[in-house]
Amino acid sequence: GPEDERYLRMAGEVLADQIEDVLDVWYGFVASHPHLVYYFTDGRGNANSEYLAAVRKRFGQWILDTCNRPYDQAWLDYAHEIGLRHHRTKKNQTDGVQSVPIVNHRYMVAFIYPITATIKPFLAKKGHSPEDVEKMHQAWFKSVVMQVALWSVPYVKEGDF
Image 1: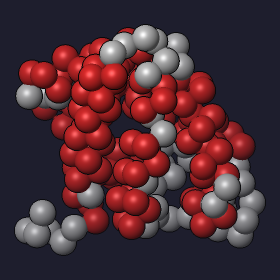
Image 2 (image 1 turned 180 degrees about the horizontal axis):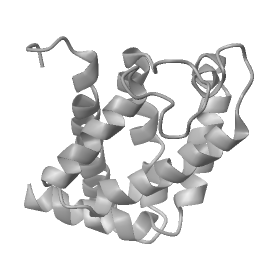
Image 3 (image 1 turned 180 degrees about the vertical axis):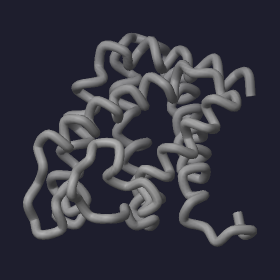
């Protein structure tokens, strides 16, 4: 609702100059779990640094878009495209890389936790009240859950979504 939108915009202002730091935490999390690093490899354990950099840039933009874009039809189309790019439907096409053919759905859902838990300290760094930080965090959490649900469409049997 409107309150969540207001707090997402506030979060966008708070996070705007911290994007690289957030991504360092998130990429550190991925790097510490070989089963997650796998999704940035050719399937034989060889990571593609150009691919990692391209995804990182998009991930940073996604943080800003989560906070700042209106959740309209263009945003729904964008969310659908993100889902397709993780699914075998369009995986690897954006960057023209040879990587694993799909990001398994269980990791998309499970990633909600670290993406949400690790953002809160960043939201608290600009002197907002604990209440505002909590409201920003809850708005972020709701948005991430909603987006992962939307990204899940390609993984769900037609008619079951």
